[in-house]
Image (cartoon, rainbow, N blue to C red; front, side):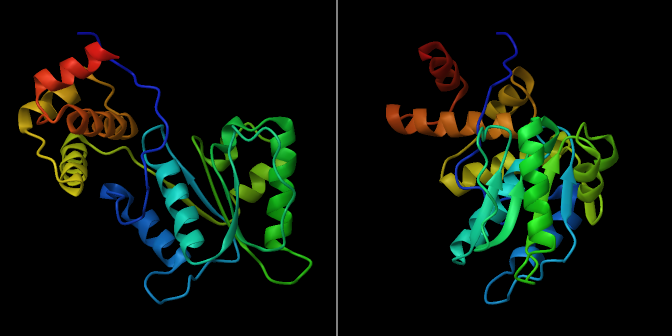
Length: 232
């Protein structure tokens, strides 16, 4: 069976609680303070926060989790990623702006991102908003206009590290347990040896397996995984 590099979207319901930090604990704790937990208000810094790292290191999960957490608090938040062809103008009602995959921004998206940044940090209302962004490169190496690139590197910068195999296994086990399904070691070995090893792809594969197992009323086994692939 050939290796599969799954073209995935976001896993459903990303939260900070479901993010397995591993070597990225400092970034996770920073974002927990950023959004506030329980009845504690968020302590967003007046300077931006920028996350960078390889694909599969968890950047989009964290940004989506922050966006969702602020939304659950009743806050309005601006979101921009490379798939947004016509970004909205800055909205004074926004509590924060979140910008993902900045390394892929077009010229028009860069212009709007800079507009969002300036209005968030130095708004006419005098009430600074939070700025959270992510890309696959450190700020200085981003292929962006100079004024946007320098501002992204102005504040807190965290490099996210990919999880090692032990940590990936722990995440798979945690996610399977959260779904109430048993994921045997032999199935996990098969997933790690035969498929793309980045965590996002593995989570998507687990989502597909879980849905297929529910649909067929069967336990998750290697034969079930093969049957799922053959049915696609």
